[in-house]
Length: 523
Image 1 (cartoon, rainbow, N blue to C red):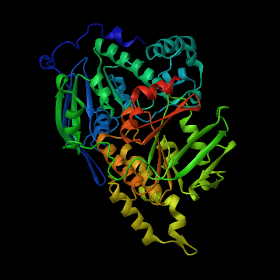
Image 2: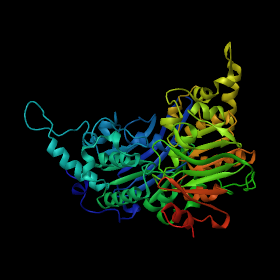
Image 3: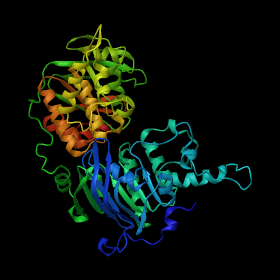
């Protein structure tokens, strides 16, 4: 199958949008309702050939639902979708792909036990001539190498099993798979959520090449800085409706935020409830080494009433260190102290019993039971508080559900709604709620707002600030520099598995963080 720029040789992205007589995609008054939730209420948008249109909005605004309608995953209850002027009503994603419309999901859909090449051509394998339909491995491998090179992956990955790849490379394989079709419209739902900065820059180059080839891109992201980098226009959704549109010259962080949340976000990074100085150490790590970790021991402490930020490049060992404190990994040297006394953590159960709670980086894999309801997930780690010899007190359980759904403003039709059907931000709120119900002494947040929209971020920041103000020690691991500098009272920086330094006050700057993270001195 030819590469996409062979099929779309003449660049069209330079033509003004107003001169496009026939949009590549035109959605008119799309409406979609699920049990208890009106996801879309008369949404419209247009997408020109060779244009990148970013669709932004808070979690639950209807972005993913709209994209799934365009890609044939859902059928609209009302409204119309046109592809190059012709009405379409796909009966499934296969029909959409055959028509040139491909969706890259936020959550990866790869067969982990197969090779990268097998995944790139799954369902459309090349075969040799003849009745036996033998796979043409040579042809697929050659095409796989070409696709991987377009997303910046070496050809050696073609023969590797997907399960052996890091998350960022899996995301790039997903993108490469979409590029292997005769794509006219490429829909990207949070494509950089698992990518490093280098991988993200490579994705930008891929998008630029697609634009030049006349391919249209629908781009969903909560990272507004990257929206400004890639988008020709922005369509904003709020509560399932169109909230506004921004031309290229109007795309700014403030303009997008105002349309998304309907208000200005003042004090986005609040420090209302805490002094920033912190109290006595809640957790002290002295000479800690752990299974699978570096030979260099780690020393740091988290104090009551403060937010300790932890920075470092991908692979620096921040997540692994938090897993050791939480009991996922075994300590092989050093000691942990909790409120000055010895702490022995042999499992997550020990950590939870001690009041040390972890909001993990991958909420879907490690933080939630996706097939179960919101209430089930809130109850699961709190059964010891809800039960007795007679079983679970259903009245107290229902009250716990109401309390945390209301307090965290989880958008769900009921506590019985499977948590896997919620938006990413609302899933994250459920993870917070299940732990906050226990009253943590130390709350570990690993990438606390990954895949969360700007409005939900503000709510999470206010909640974390309030917790610290009540004396909870907060250890926040984040790759978001604005979040790190805006929320942290102190920052510990890791480099290649060891603590490279600590920054606070006027010394806490982006330049100082990056110097330490890359192995240099703080000053």
